[in-house]
Length: 117
Image 1 (cartoon, helix red, strand yellow):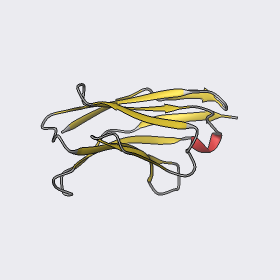
Image 2: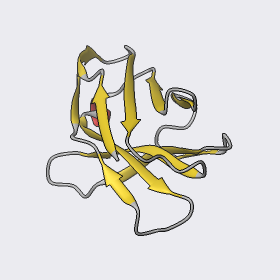
Image 3: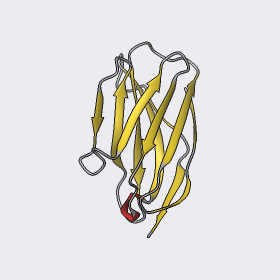
Image 4: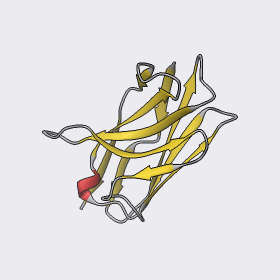
């Protein structure tokens, strides 16, 4: 599975950005796609994920500000980020893992999101 992410960039605090991640290859019908982020000097953390059935999960720090969605026909996941804060600055990574096997887990190349104060 290959994951192609796009949409990062520089935005002022309070602004919005939308990340996209398209998956290609052998996509299992039951899967979870999501976004993680890693800020400098910190561990990678979950931002949000969504199952192929549409069940979502968010980190407490982004609830109410970020919305994850997906288009199963396009094997694409989106992350709409609003009310961005400087602490949201990080490299954002797209993730795919199969619902059939925990060992089938892929990461995309990161996309940098920088929020200026």
